[in-house]
Length: 459
Image 1 (cartoon, rainbow, N blue to C red):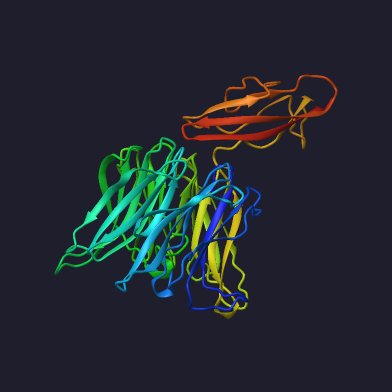
Image 2: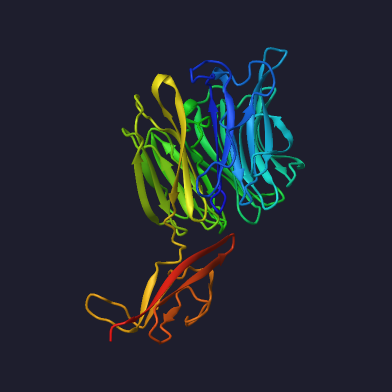
C-alpha cells in the first residue's frame, strides 16, 4: 500500500475456465486498487508466458510480491519455473513495471536465476532480494534498479553458503526507508556434515549505496514451509521504521515473538511474546512508524489485526469472522500493508469444491499521528449539559520530532503548534471553519482536517 492508500494484490491460481480445480500450471496475477478500494486494473496475468511445465504445483514458485507508489505506478517481482534441457527445474526471477491503469511499462526484466524474491521501493527506483543456487551453493543477493527498471550495478552479496554447510534457505524480506537505506531479513537452516540443523533468522542493514551497516544480527527461529511459509502471500516479518529502528518477528515452538532494535542495531527491549497461532503473523509499517500485525488466531476462522504506535505501544486490536462458503473458511497467508490513513489485509480462504479465493479488506488506521476530533466553541459559554465554551484546544498531542502547520490561521492562537487554541471571534452568527493540519517529520508527512463549529451559545 502506498502512503495515500492505493494498493495492489497478487495471487496464484490453478483454475481452468469454469472454475474447476485442476493440477495444471499455476498462474500468477496482480490487480491494483485506488484508495477507495475500487479496482483500477483488471486481473493482470503475469505467468506462465512461454510453453512448457511452468510453475507446476509440486514445485510452485512463491507468491509474487508487489510495491506501489502514490502515483499508482506499481512493480511486481515473481519467479517462474522453467524446464531446462538437463531435466532440471530452475526458477527465473523477473520484474515487471506497470502504469496506474495496468499498462505495462517496458517488457519484463530478468533479474537472476533464484527463488523467494521480495521487493521494496526506493525514492526513485526499487530493490529486489532473492536466493540464488549455483553448483550446490546458495547466495543471498540484492539487485538495485533505477526508475526505468534498469539495473544499478551488479548484485550485492548479502550472504554466501558453502556447499557442505547448507540444508535450506527460506524466504528473503527487504525493506527501505526514506533515506534509501535498506534492511534484509532471511531464514536458513545451516547443517554441516554430522551436525544438528538449527533454524535461524539473519538481519543485515545497508546504506543506500549497498555498504553494510553494523554487524549481522542472528536470531533463533522456526520458519514453516509449504503453504504456511515463504510461499504464502503473507508472513512478512520485518519492518524498517523512519528513525532507523527496526522490528522482526521470530517463532519458537509455535509461539511468535516481536523483537525491537534501535537505529544502531542494538536490542531496544526484551522480545515481546505475541501469541501462538497456526502461522506466523504478517507485519508492515508506514513511513510514519505505525506498525500493524495481521494473523489467524488458533481455532478460529477470524482475521485479526493489531496496531502499534510509532512508540511501539499497542493502540488497537480488532477482528472479523471469515464466513465459510459451504466449507471451512480457514483464512491462510494473511498479509498486511499500511498507508498513512488506511491499511489493507489480504488472505486465502477455502470455498466449495476444493477451490480457494483470495480476499482483501481495507481498514481505518487508528494512528497516534492524527488531527484530533471536531470541536465546537461558543461566544457565550454554556454550563450543565452543554459544555461549549468561548475557546478550546484543537489538534493532537504533540509528538517529538514532528512539526505542525495549521491552515487557515484564522481564530487560532498559534498555527505552528500541535494543539493551538481556537477562540470565538464574537458576533451572533453561527458558522464553520475547516482547518487542515500538516504533520511533518523525517520520512513522514500527513495532512488531516478538523472542523470547528462557531455558535452563539448560551446567554
